[in-house]
Image (tube, rainbow, N blue to C red; front, side, top):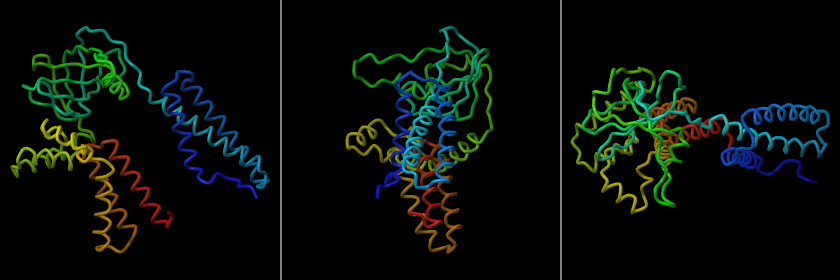
Length: 321
């Protein structure tokens, strides 16, 4: 008797979703409207096949057509997601402009500049992201601070050396096409703060960082503690970064699924001795993981790991492997 369904259907569906994303990323054949129409038509087609299968569950061709339709649906969904999130480059010139920059993420500082990702708001333009440089002699900004002033936006330059790291392409994938620099306070018109959820998370995170600074660790220890607990690698010296990179263990300092997994196992065995109710244990562990994700700056790798461990815990509650 022939098998009616694939042995590992979720692997096929995941590959189909990835195929749609890759196709949309490296080709310009279809747009978001085409993928949206394809998703709608395939959904109707699958509903019709489902109705037929309910009437005649032994029809092999209908079952095969159903799974082929699901795979095509995932391809279309991947293309739709990729097209929907594809950043649009704003058209700007190199003239000075009055704008407001909202700090969304703080990056590792260089020898001459503090660096940030910022969201720009100005008249006649949709909000867009920029790479923001601030001179080191100025007091650094915090996440959720808004700087209103006069700025010049320059395009990110392409790599000068062949086969070198393409920083322009890396930033464009993050929706960043322009950069701007601030050399002194004279260009600032006003400073304000947007007290949203990111502001309070960063405020509490900074308080904890300042608390660790009071212990007066040496420079190397301070940098490692900040990187492991808070995902802040700005305190790492260039020598330490070079040593970790040469040893091939730089990933240890990047807060990711590895650290979330270690924390999950530690909490699971620790809380397991304190509480007997499975639902309560899972809720406490999930709250700890969410708090850790917030304190580490909500890095995408950490958020992904917390979501996956949350789904894993839900599966265990329902005795599903």
